Length: 203
Image 1 (cartoon, rainbow, N blue to C red):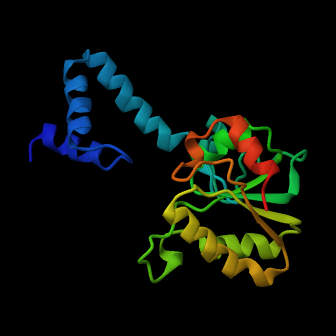
Image 2 (spheres, helix red, strand yellow; image 1 turned 90 degrees about the horizontal axis):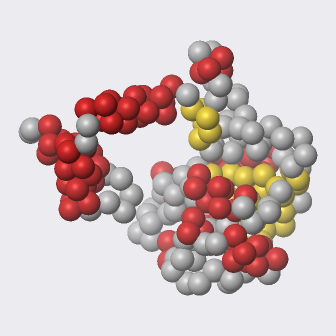
């Protein structure tokens, strides 16, 4: 396969990107100055070298040069490492981008990134989300409330039902965002005021 088709296929693997959009990305890179292509390639390399995944919430975050050259086991992100956060409240989200949006709503608790949702036909939920890791996080921490901040979609509702069933015997208060989020919407794209409203009306 030639380099144009290979890169097109690579872009198609991005969420929400189809064949036409992927090809447009490649055409843009072909028409860009060599220096611009080199800079993009360098930034992609730096993304892996200068980021780490939080051992507590599983969010990806930028790290300093000193940390990037050493061990990354047990490293905490700036949110989990903040002593001023409300550690009794855990906000469970689907993906990293959801955290960025929820932060703008003024939420001051902590987070856990599931890594996706569970497809309706899935027989083993743990193959699609960090179910065991969440159970461990809840069991090992003194939590007063777990907020299930999942998208208002069919798969989001399905995943929410699974989590409620799995976590119900752990003795924690479990709530879900109020329907300030319209049906079919993803948390990543909701505005901060809508998220704040959904938080205040959670049940």
